[in-house]
Image 1 (cartoon, one colour):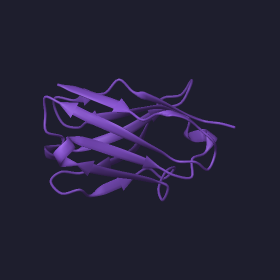
Image 2 (cartoon, rainbow, N blue to C red):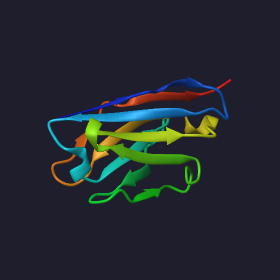
Image 3 (cartoon, rainbow, N blue to C red):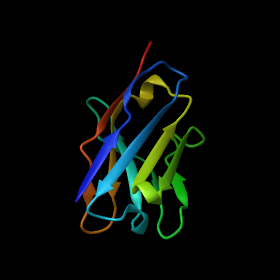
Length: 114
């Protein structure tokens, strides 16, 4: 089983990025998938999740209204659309398959800066 995040990079404040979490070895649509982030020198923060079955979503207060999680079952991929980015959104973003056994991706760096 492998989760691979991609789509990170450098973006100016107010900009947008779309992260992907692609899975191999398991069907993502059958599991709850969360996104987390970790800023330099800080602990890992929960960003949001997409549920299963169905695609209900829930978000942390710091990203609510700006970030959107979605899923493409045909591509076995979960996405994190990030809009109105702020410098405090900077960090390494991880996806996680919830429930035992837990699986994490390796992370992708997002930097919001001028």
